[in-house]
Length: 269
Image (cartoon, rainbow, N blue to C red; front, side, top):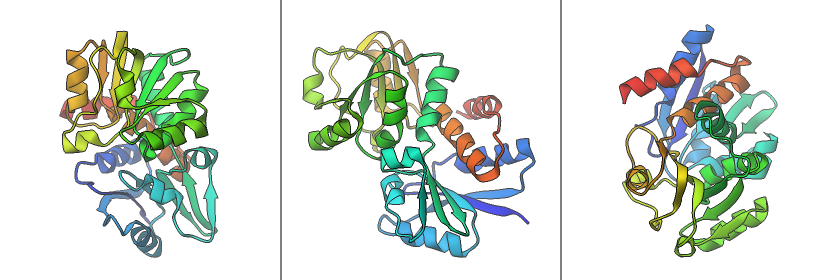
């Protein structure tokens, strides 16, 4: 019998997750289906409950529901270490004893930057833009990798709260003038609306990596990075595949190979 999975988001039409998990299933011989589901902005909990009642085995969660996933109302919740620290979740397992929550974003980002891109983060000056669920999910792994992290956000209070929780630095965009970073990560959803975070010129150090968690096209942030001295500019496709592989492992107990999947998706861009 085919086991059913899904990804929940809003918007969701752009998602490559169904294609990725189809390739994982073919590669590993797993009998699963996987679909993209658009949930109303005020209907995340109801959507999850419907999937559970319909016999789904689990789901992924994307923008803007990762913090909602952490707060999902269920009497029996089981939170992994990464979820407890991030206060956000992107992977749900539906089991007989309740909903098990995981966050695979951090390990997905680490594997793409360090393993796929060959950029070791220890000692690097890292600017993380954003204070939502995507940023929360990667802060702990970035810190544990030995990076020197600064969190910037349009609403500085949110950046301060996040920085205090993870014992890193924070600042407003206005305070970034004159500072340089070795790795600049856009964890905001600005690319979805074709907007550009208000970064000052000169933010990229020589040899810097500019990394946008969005994927599928060149975002304004990526264009800005190319024009202002970033040595390497990357979208988040590799992170998407790597975090999906970790979710697949939680669900199926099998870890798929990612390199061929990333290469296949790159050819489609």
